[in-house]
Image (cartoon, rainbow, N blue to C red; front, side, top):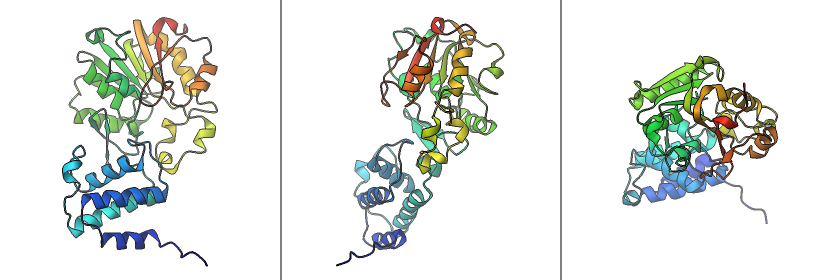
Length: 311
């Protein structure tokens, strides 16, 4: 006996809309639909439940941090229809949810977000929002200058400005589009008096500037991994992801030029994501420390100025 053919998603959505009444119903449906569509996560959530909650609450204009009081709220048919349409858009277009909503959240801070830059998600943000740096930075008031190299939409530059209240922060990037988004985020956080932007390739636009702390989330995805990226990640700027055959093309240039841009006692936090093996192979003689984050124990390297090669 043959199995019945599955109904198309549009038909499923139309039928579901007639049976749903509450926020709870919509979240349950969203989880099922996201899983059935085999969407990929990693842009603010890492599972279907969290993504469904974010999607449904945002669509309904409800607070993103207050789910429980809302779960059994009864909804109007128009609200249900609009939310189902949003779920379908996420599943069919395979855009990161942050691009669909136009905003992303990192360490409790809101950032404007679109395809001009990567969705904010750097594990360096975890380190800025913890005591992990205290062995090297016992007095954060001593941090006077910070560079966010490859700043993208400036999320790390802004988080650094919040963490180091006296610091002047520079965000630098090659992409004019990314810097346009960065400027909007700096204005959103009212930090134009402390965070400035530079355009150019890596160290070139910094005119000999020296910093107490350099943050860097560069393009580091190796060529083989780039070829296998899920659809959601392919909507992000290729130039902000691709790092060459072993992922280290730009990182080699960053490490080579970093020492002259750090003050005595300065530090660099360098994100390498899942490329720890390639990083260790490329820099076998470099002394550094892996700083554990929620993304893993080998995703961010701390490098002290004196360990960096002479230019």
